[in-house]
Image 1 (cartoon, rainbow, N blue to C red):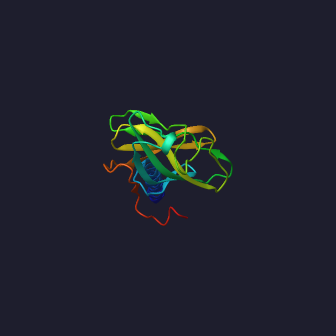
Image 2 (image 1 turned 60 degrees about the vertical axis):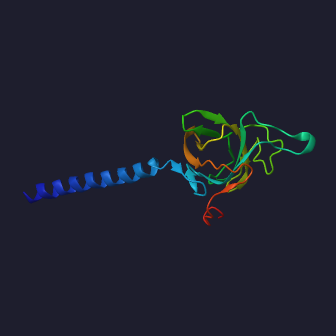
Image 3 (image 1 turned 45 degrees about the horizontal axis):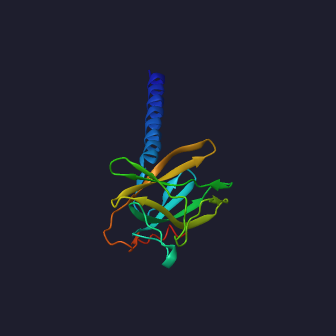
Amino acid sequence: MMKQFYRCALWGSAALLAMLLGGCQQQKQLRSDFSMGERVPVGQMTYSVVESTWRTQLGESFKIRTPEQRFLLIRVSVTNGTGKDVSIPLLTLEGHDGQTYREIADGEGVDNWFGLIRTLGPGQTQQGNVLFDVPLTSYKLRVPDINDTGFEGYASVQIPLRMDPDVPIQAPINPDVLK
């Protein structure tokens, strides 16, 4: 009788532990929406959106560039937490209606452009502006989870709409992002 009690207690404890560990793992996977300024861990990469700015044009004097809609510059910081070189693909914005917009691959007229070929070495951090030509509204920036098996999904960073064109929206200062 006592042996049966211990066996039930052991199985009950194992089942409870499995549920708790499964719940913790599930909680970690569920967090996929972040705000500007937050550290966004995606796989072994860490992203942060530092600021966003709307522009009606880029460049100066004879090299003025105009958008089809509006230019949205988003300053991002990316840290490679892997032990090898990682290439960061072009990023994507998602509108409230689910429509997606691919980052523009031409950075002409963009100060501190993140670049087209962006390979980060192990432990390296790179910061720069990415460019979109999109309608004036709020968005979610999709940041990809890239690992040995390829693309594994993404997390989203809220990019709020601000009606003052050409004035950056800065994320709250988070000292952890600067590390």
